Amino acid sequence: MRQQLVEAIKYWDHIAPIAHYPKNKKEFNFLVNQLDELLKIVGDDESHRLMGLVDVISNLIASYEEEHFKIPAKKGISALKFLLESHNLRQSDLSKIASQGVLSEIIRGKRALNLRQIKLLAKYFQVDVSTFIDEN
Image 1: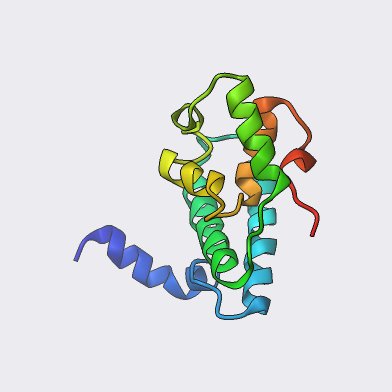
Image 2: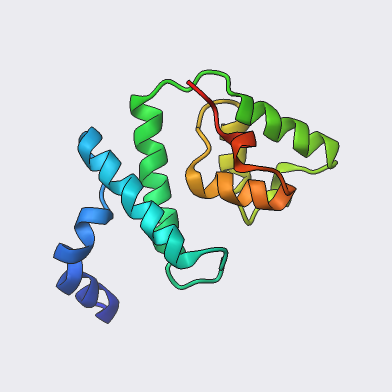
C-alpha cells in the first residue's frame, strides 16, 4: 500500500467529517461553515497548500446544492455572461476560477456558483461579490 494512502487512512477519522457528501441540511450547513473558516485561512493565496481541500469542500457543497435546491435563472449568471462578453473573454480564460466544463454548466444554469468562485470572480472583475449573489 502506498505511504500516502497509509497516512490518509491513519487520519481518516479526523478528515472524514469535512470530506464527505452531506446527508442532510445539518451536515450541509456544517460544511459551509467549515469552508468559510478555511477561506479565512487561505485568503487570496491560490497556491496555498489547503486549496485542494477548499476545492473538495466547494464541490461537495455545490453537488448537494444541485441535488437539493432548485437553481432558477439567476442574476449572478446573467452578470457573469455580461462580464465575459464585455471583456471579450472565453470561459477558458477563467481557468483559475473553475474549469471550462464547470463554467459551462454554471452559465447553462446546471450548476450554481459556489462561495469560492463568487469571491474569485468578484476579485477578477473588480466588482462587489453581491454582483454574483442571487436574492431568493
